[in-house]
Structure formats: C-alpha cells, structure tokens
Image (cartoon, rainbow, N blue to C red; front, side, top):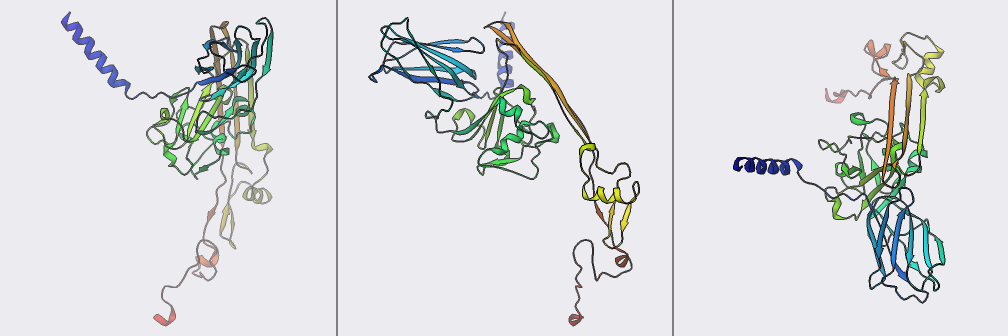
Length: 371
C-alpha cells in the first residue's frame, strides 16, 4: 500500500509538470444590466431568465440591491431575456447578440401592471462597450464566409483592421508552413501576436510567425481581434489577439456544400507569356537588344489549377442538450510561375559595356586622370 501511494504521488507530480502553464483565455461572453421601474428607481429581487434561442441554454439570475444582474461565461449566440417581478408586467427583450469575449449590456425598464401582461422589446443591434477599455473588432460568421478571400483563408480579414501593418513575408493564401502571419499590430513585434481557436493556443511556438490550424471559413462562428488594452487573461501576448470560435451546432439542422475553382484558361496573358504566344512557342527566345530570355516550353501562360471544395453539417443530437457540427475542406492546387532572366547582350559579350542593358551601369574605377 505504501508503494502504491508513492506511485500515485509520482504520477500526480509528473502530470502537473506535463501540463505546464495553463492560461484562462476568454472565449465566452457576459450579459449584464440594470432593472428599473418607470420612475428610474432600481428594482431589486427581480428574476431574470436568459435563454439562448439556438441551443435552448437557460441561465437564471436575480437583481441585487442596486437592481443589477450579471450572467457570465455564456457562449456566443442570440439570446432572449425575460424579467419578472410582482406588480410589474413581464418584460421580454429578444434578439440580444452576444459575441466572443464581449459584454452585452441590456438595461430593462419594467412597466406597472399585471404579471400576466407582457412587454416585448427588440434589442438594439448596435451596442457600445462601456465595461472595458479594450479595443477590438468582431468579425461574424456571415462576414467570414461572404467577404472575398483569396485562398479562402480567414487570415486575410485581419488586414482590414485599424493599426495592422503586414510584412513582405505575410502570406494570406498559403496555409500551414507555406503560410505566414507576419503582421504588426499598433507597432508591436510581428512575433508577439496570439492566435486562439476555441481558447487553445494556435501559434507555432517555434517561430510565432505561422499558425498550426487554419479552420475552414465555413466552420468559423466568428472571431474577435483585440488590438489594445485587453485584460490579463491574454498576458502571453503584447501584439494582437485573434480569438476564433468555431461553430458547435444548434437545435436546427444546418449544412451545405461548396466549390471554388480557379483555372488559367480564364486568365489573360502576362507580359512575358504574351510575347511568347506571339512569337515562337515552345522554345527559349533571346532578345540581343535587351539581353532578355523569356521561355515557357509547356504552356503560353503560367499553370494555375486551384480547387477548393468541402461541406459542413450540424444539428441536435438531443434537443436543448447535446449538439454536433462537422466540417471538412480540401485545397488542391497546381501553380506555375513565370520567371525572367537577364543575360549579356551581343555587345557586352564582345567586351563593349558602354551601353549596359542588364544590371547596374559599369563605372571605370581608374579614371584617366588617376592612371
């Protein structure tokens, strides 16, 4: 028994060592507000029922002595808020949108009357965040899927935010090690950005310039890009924080299939391919006047065959209790690149460099007066 206790103690210690630092990344939201009567006086003890209209999740709260209520740690979605109190009409506020790592402030004013009567209010779609000084923008799922994105890569949407400056190595088309999220936020280092997927660190910790997972844009519910003054839960980053939340299903069935294609047959010629098409196809062409060689022995235009296709499907396993969402996407591409080269002209090959056509102009290091 003593030996078994020692083994358990060692196993627990090893588990804690393997876990390493754990950060409390915030991917949920909060709904809060103040309940008042027609005169503006606060109403303590009122019951507040907050319901997610998509999943049926219900959270209950009671206003305190200051008439305030708070419901933290709610998943993003659309909510309905019902407030009840004796001697007042029931108040219903519908279509309250709650986003990732955000707070929705919903103040309710009760009207005098019977509790069997009901007052319905439509929530304001545009809200101003007053509970935090953090600066950030939410990109909702509809924007992610419908805005034009080269390569169907969500990273391109980070470049439309204020204070973002990309480097030459930034690549919003490639994915995995072929991609690159090299951009600075408000002048901070490009390697100090933090990418999160459902609260998990998504950075390649070896370089911090690439990310590990590129969720299909059809699987992204929304993401929020925090640029400044965010809370201590994001203490491991000093640049931007890109907080992505994926879809999780609801009481309704949703699904779809998609295909996006690009083909060079629909592209125009670039300058060099056009010269090749007009001249000798299939052989290298040399212009002695400019010293340029342009060639494309297989095709007149660079090859481009890109096919993006996939599907998504989600719904309830048990209504109001358990849901699922499944998404897959494939990216297949064959791409050619037109390249140019510079070679000496006929005069240069004969030793005459008075009219250099390729590269920098040559200068005699020994002028006549110094010989």
